Figure (cartoon, helix red, strand yellow):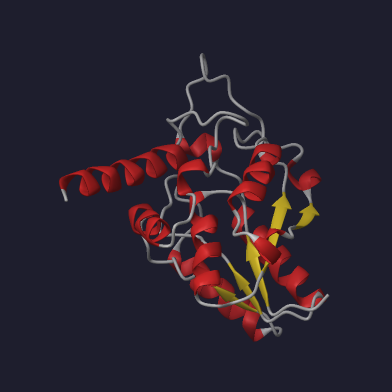
Amino acid sequence: MTTENILLASGGMDSTTLAYHLKDQKLDFVPLFIHYGQHCADTELATLRKVLPEGKFRKIEIVDISSVYKYSSSRFIKPADLWSDDISANDLYIPYRNILLLTVGASFAHTLGGKKVYSAFIDSNHAKEIDCSNDFFNSMDKMIEGYGTISIEMPFRYFTKYEVARLGVALKAPIGVTFSCQASPVIPCGACPNCVDRLEAIRKIEIEDIDK
């Protein structure tokens, strides 16, 4: 199989919107789902199968590297008890996760003869991770492109969650059924940073549409 574009896809709002954006731009892509041990992997994958654009874009490639974080205490790896655990954004931090996702994506793309890895990372960093800043992303894509044939494309790098959601609505992406909870593996908790950002963005759009 040969393809020019790989999309890092998770079933979340951002990557789903990016999938529809790429389709709107008439760009072919192969969705790549990376199982890195996140407790919600099954839910993410099931959601991804529902939210991707119809047709050839539904063919998902899956890479399992779940053993990398098997000893991690992150609540994104080991789910919290939502009734009794007091969870902060720092408890959800997974060290080097984004470095891992981008390098695995680039390596996978290279084996397929690809040229670009698309990622929907946005300008949001609640736990202040070293690998979730625009400075990091700028350095990372330069390094990968400088030492190989793959480039990292992040069209939403300077977007807010609201801006991604608004684009998703315009593209008729099913953002309302996406899933990106950090604390719960099955049902969105509504309180983790991912849930809060997503709900606030959707709520803002709903209010704007009502006021029109």
